[in-house]
Image 1 (cartoon, one colour):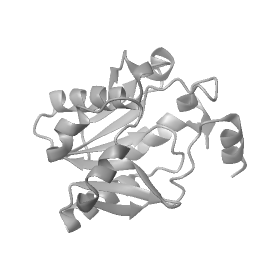
Image 2: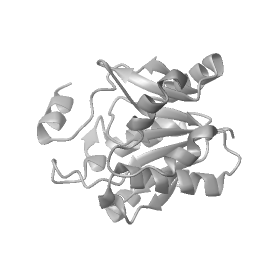
Image 3: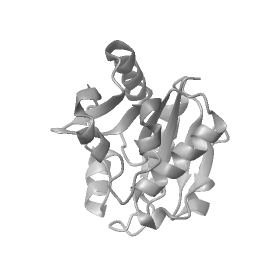
Length: 194
């Protein structure tokens, strides 16, 4: 398989006060929505990065996905990216691309993941990001030339800094409703109303 997926689910949802990965939406938890979308693609392996609520979330994971526990999750998103990319490369050293996704975009679909790969095939760009409401972000595909940089990220910026740094090698795909992620009770209540 030439493309794998890393799903970041290690945060402690500090603004929410409970694990947002396990919030229910349309009869499934948010993490299940993301994993199901990933499983509906041909992309393998799929690695879920756990941290703050590892035990509770682990119980919800299907056997088709692997997980890694990021003991350093409190150091920020970059530590989870490093944990996920490392685990994926250990399992699939020949992988050409890695898609990094988060576990709280309620409207993620397999099609969103597949559009990233298709755009890369069409444009030959090394980074393909999703775009929504005047911003670019996750899920985002990185070609193997960027793996060393992903593995040397620091702090809580995640990989967003790499999009700015290499903007001449970035293409984008539209992800309708990609801006809807859950950080607070208000966000969650608004989601439920939809």
